[in-house]
Image (cartoon, rainbow, N blue to C red; front, side, top):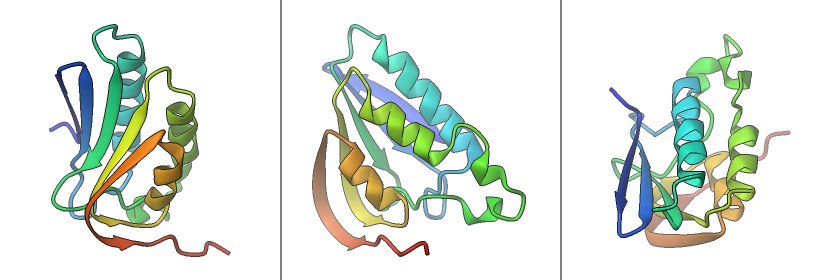
Length: 128
């Protein structure tokens, strides 16, 4: 099952992350997301990208299950994806609903725009 779905309508691509329970950015999610963004960058029918999560959550950042194995450091890393979004030839909008936790809340500032709807929690914990 795909963990990142892509649908395009009226020139706008919507990338929805579906990785229950909190839409964490596991290695497989990061790979799918990277590939979608790469493909959409060259799609002349797409004028912009909306990044969102499913089940009432945006993205919860790193997948804590990968901390023991170090998989959270495998390319593409979260930072790699953030940089890819920053330099995208297409505008990227973060459509937030519900919770945006951990490193995901920093994605709000990487997107070229953001749209908040029914936000319950924006949490950016200290990492030191």
